[in-house]
Length: 239
Image (cartoon, rainbow, N blue to C red):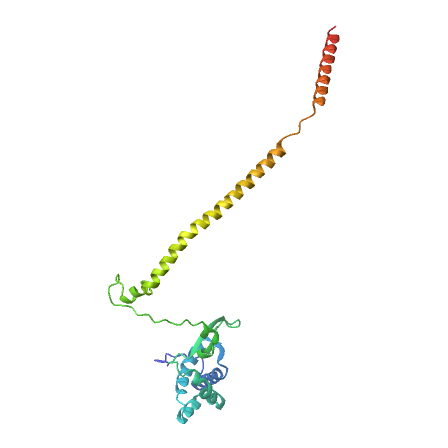
């Protein structure tokens, strides 16, 4: 009967389950990342993290205890020589489980279990927390530090230098308007002259040439002859 046995048996007997977790822990320490099912990864995390904590104390006794769980000399050497230095400043939580979907054959939930300190991509993206201090005064009030930050910083110089600077600024203000006015007046005169030249040129183009007087008289005589001819033709037609 399995009364009180809340851990996952993984469908195996105790010796088989212990051997499987030992082999998976060895592979995780050597390769830093393995792919397995979510159920096995959760069981492996409970199995391997106490071993990683034990490896922080590099003594003969600790090596013998870890070897009794892993049963592999290479993994024990890698754990104490390489991994222990990486996890020295981490107080637990040495592994991470990343789900990758379902397996095609039996639709089992698959995942990747890895050592946290060996994933450089996620370590580089981790945001740094900035420490902020809050004053315990009223919510609406400002502290002295905030007022000091808000107030502009003014550097006080000698009185003589300030007077000289003010005189220089006044001289510049007196000189600059005249220069600007002269320049603007010269530009305005140039624009007026250019516009007058353009108007004169347009008038010259628009004036038509006068026809000679002889041509005008000849046209008038021809028109009178045509009128007389038309009147005579009308009279003949009436007769």
